[in-house]
Image (tube, rainbow over all chains, first blue to last red; front, top):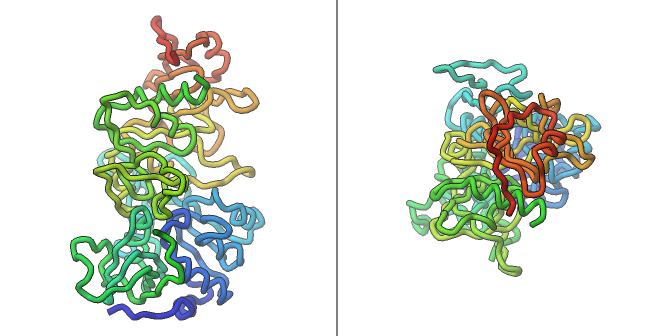
Length: 221
Length: 217
């Protein structure tokens, strides 16, 4: 069973130094209520693992503006001037990771793998300092798993087991981040009784989900 | 036809019926308007969708339906949604027939630089490195020269690379250039452009075959 908690309770599980994975792509499918609660808690020195740094006023951009992020593994910063300014001022330490590699490194952590071999980034700065492994004549970069302490994700509906379904392109990184969290907290628009979700449509099994938070605001029609 | 339309219409001719295609944001999306009749192309969005349809009418936007650039989209019949790891398995695993991306620089080894200018602009690579590594055909679509008129097709890229030796075709407002093992081959020039114009606007060495086609009619 997944336990229903408040967004503030969720934020209280996040401590300085927490390796925090956050679902969403350009703030679509981002757990906005939990993000707002973290901003309110002022817990700083966080390590953020996310696809993109979103906008200053939407998604994880709000954590950056509140200066709560000490370091991040992220694939795209282009929509958020604040994170680029903090990076240039050396206030935030950024590892840029190709998006597909980022997803597989997080998935590896959730799947009990030490890392993955990816051809992405061979011959670029991405390979610097990493081991190259040649298999059947092809060079791959050995990319270590990205360990996650707490994952906060967003889904459309949950049942009380924590099984989740998603809506359209708001699924994105959410089921992957959910796998990797030692603690995974899912913010959802709606919580239904056990048995009400079609088992064939569940895209994130409840085994990955420890806590549920009800969204403060449902944004879709 | 303006420059962007000319590039867009020429990109569209590279697609075959049944292709799965990923279009980068900006200029590459111009191709959507020029897919020939009878050619059905399935467009992927890296954030987790196949079967991307046109932009919604005003007032019909769904906040959960965006493309990789954050723009609102619709789903065509037969569309499907999936998570980001699966989306990049499709991309990296060689299941995308063609990807079209913009570039800051391309060189005669087929190297591409399009994700950062050190000290100036560091937006990050997003999905570009995976796309260029995994797609079966990598098409660069861009203006032939930068805003100051400097060539973008170089002997060797000097910006950080997105991928090494992965570009197959370059489509600009002046020319269509194929990347081959022997070097860059000028295949077509735009209407109103001469081979001489293209050579002048290109730093890389270009092989000019006897037959050079035209496009942009």
